[in-house]
Amino acid sequence: MAEVSRSGFPIGQPPAPVGGFPGMGGTTAEVPPSTPPAPAPQTAPVTATVPQAPSRKRSGDTWWERVRFEVTDAVTSGALSERLIRASSAVEAPITTGRRIIVLGTAGGAATTTVAALLAKLLGSIRQEPVIAVDATDHSGNLLRYLGSSQAALLTELMQQFRTQSVRTLPDAVKHAASCGSQVFAAGRADVPALADAPVALQEWTDVSSTLSRFMAVTVVDGGASPLSRHAAALLGTAHAVVLVSPPGNPEAAKLASIQESLGKSFPDVHQISVVVRSRQNHEAALSDGMLPYDRHLASGSSLQLSRLGSRTRIAATELTGKALMAANRA
Image (cartoon, rainbow, N blue to C red; front, side, top):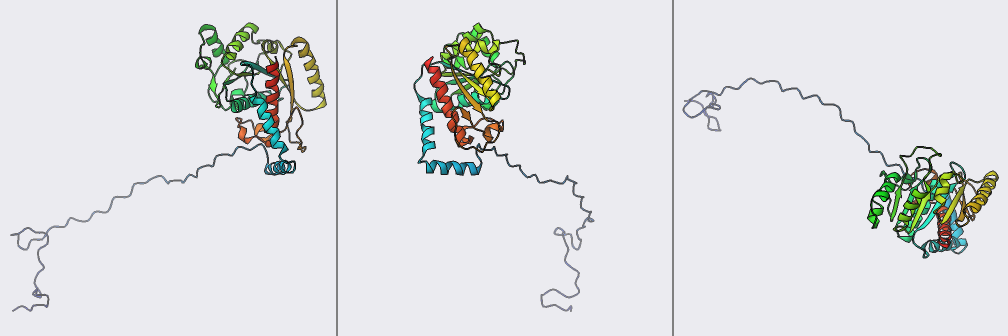
C-alpha cells in the first residue's frame, strides 16, 4: 500500500494532468516554446519645451518717477491730479460736430505720428464719440500700427468708395476703415510711395473730409513733416486747427516760429497749436506748457496704450488735446 501524505495524496504518484480535457488520461498540454519579446520601437527623445514668458511692455514712467509723482502730488495737495481733471473736462466740452485737426511736423522724426495717435486715442476714450485718424502723409506711415490695428485700411479705397457710392450711415463711412477701439477708426496710405511730388488733390480731399465730418465728431489727420508743401496746403485747406510738432532746441524753435508765421499768412482762419516733443530722458520733472515729456512707452514704438503712459505724459497729452479741440471749435 502506498504511503499517503498528510495532504491526502499518495507519495510518489505522477502529477495530475495539466491542461487536458476529461477522458484524455495522463496527457499533458504542450507548452509552446517561449519567444523573445519584440524590441521596443525606437522613439525620438522628447525635449521639454519651456514656454517663453511674454515680453512686458514698458510703462511710461520708471518706478522712481512714479514714486516722485505721487509724493509731489501729495505735497501739492493733489494739484497734478486736479490738472488732469481740468484737462479732461476741456476734452469733454461741447463742440460743433465735424472738427478737423491737422498734425504737421517741422522735421522728420519729430513724433508727428505719435502726437496724431495720442490725440485720436484720447478723444475717443474721453468723449466716447466716433473719431477717425487718417494717415494722409506723402509716404507710408505708421499711424495704424501706433493705434494698435493690424488690419489693412487703405485711404485710397475709402476715397474710391466716397466717389462711387452713397454714404448714408456710420457703417457706410467706416466700411474701409480699421476699428481701433473706443470709437476710434483709422485709414492709412500704406500703398502710397514716398513721393512728395504726388500730393493729395485739394478737391478730392475736400470731398473726403466733408463726408467724414458728417459722421465723425473729430477727424485727426497726420499730415507728415512738410508743413509748407503743396501736400500740406491741400490738407490745411479744410482744417479747423493745426498742431505743429517740433523737436526741442533753439534752432528748431526758430524754424517753428518761421513756419507759424508763413502758415498764419496763408491760412489765417486755421488756428495754430504747437507742441515740442522731447526725444530723450530729461531730469527736469516739472510740466511745461507746450512740452510733451519723454516717455518710455512712446519711445518703444509699440502700439499706443493710454494706461501705460507716464503720469506727466498723460497730463501733457490731455492738455494738448483739449487745446487743439478748443482751437478747432473756434473756427
